[in-house]
Image (tube, each protein chain N blue to C red):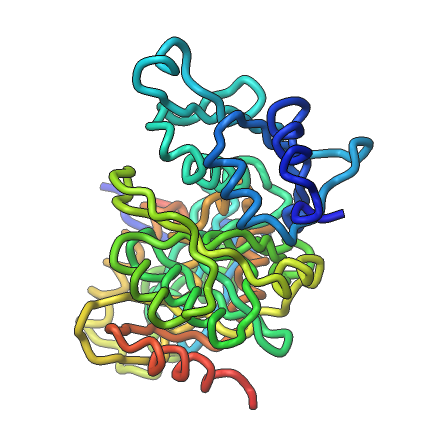
Length: 98
Length: 302
């Protein structure tokens, strides 16, 4: 059974991000698509962009919880998983499996 | 030389032969048409526009001509750019609206030196007020009302955003009004030069308001972005004006973009810079244009 070892964003130079008042817009060079992200999704993407070698799910959740200043609990973990699924769909995040 | 300085026979001759070459802000077009209503409307609405010299480049050679043998039965008008015909023929009475729609199409389909957003744009004190919205949202009505209250017209149809500078480039042309808005603006702006109403078009009854002479003469003066106001007309509703998060305003520009995707990352950066420089609002207005125009004016620096 494959398990997710880490999550990765595209190389930072291939993604443009603007943030205004905790909302984000993102341009993905690979797809040519533009996306509007809320606070959590934008923060997840920024954390991944800050770690180009990838982050384990737990490290990612810890860092996102710290940045958005909310407790790291199962609810947050579930929300982050949903965000990651969406980012993966948009080719803004990929998994590296073991 | 301006179009209004041409004698009627000279205007007719140019329209029927090599074309009337007109400057429309950043572009120039050569217009050919045998239709009397086209000539009359051009004489009215484009009087202040410059005539382009024969030696100068024109971007588009357009024709509004009669369609085949039907010219003898039920005359129809057909719009062409060079040999390309982007629309089906319409009744000959719609020849001038067809020309205007055709020119809009030329700009939105080919002027990729700009990021083009479907929006009305006016300016005061150097700051552009951009009103992005799909058709039917009331942007042309609000645009005409703002122009009536002294704002400079940049366009009632397209925001042309310079990709390098992020500034908004004027393309002042007639303001297109539809249906009830025609009488509304006639009442609100008695001095407006409104052309004949043309009924039963695809958009209902349409009429055009001449761009003020000052706006046409200032067609080379671009404007810095100042406000993005997303308008929505709701007959009879109370006016509401609320701050719009910048990311949401950005997406309004993207969603109303004609050629955003063509520009890729450069388009993203141009629109982001525009939003950086702008205050952004969502605006619902009812029938009170005095109140609506005062509300928009109050958002600009005194």
